[in-house]
Length: 168
Image 1 (cartoon, rainbow, N blue to C red):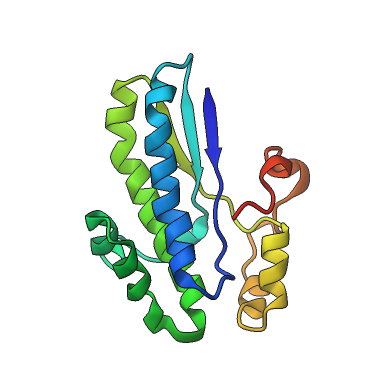
Image 2 (spheres, rainbow, N blue to C red; image 1 turned 135 degrees about the horizontal axis):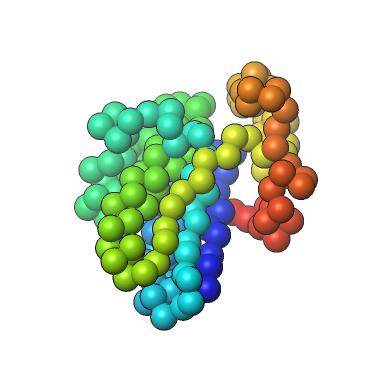
C-alpha cells in the first residue's frame, strides 16, 4: 500500500482552512493510515510539500509552537497578520510545518518498515495555480516564480496529477 498526499492552496480567504487542511488534516491522515501501512508489502507514504515550504525556517515559522501543541485556532491566528498575503503566508507556514512533521516521523516509520518522505515540486499548472494567477494579489508572484527550466510543471511531468488535480 502506498499513499500520495496532495493538499491545499494559498488562494483561500479563510486562512484557518489553509492551515487546517495543509497541516492538521494531512498529519491526521498520514497518522491514521500508519497502522494499515505497517501491514502492507513495501509500504510508502509520499507527502507533497512544495517549494513554498522552504520560504521560511522552522525557527521563523509563526505556527511552529501552535502546531506542536496541536492548537489549530492559534496556528490560524498566527498567520492573520500578513494582511492581503495571509493566504500565501499560511500556505508556506503550513507546508513548512508539514515537512517538519514528516521528517520527525521518518525514524519511527522506518523502524516499522514504512517509507515516508516529502517531495517539493515547483509550481504545477493546475486549476489551483490558474486561480491564483487570476487573483491580482498573487498574479505577479506566480508569473515571476519559475523553475530554472522557465515553465510550470504539469502533464506527463507529474503522472499522478490527473487523479489528484483540484484536491483541496
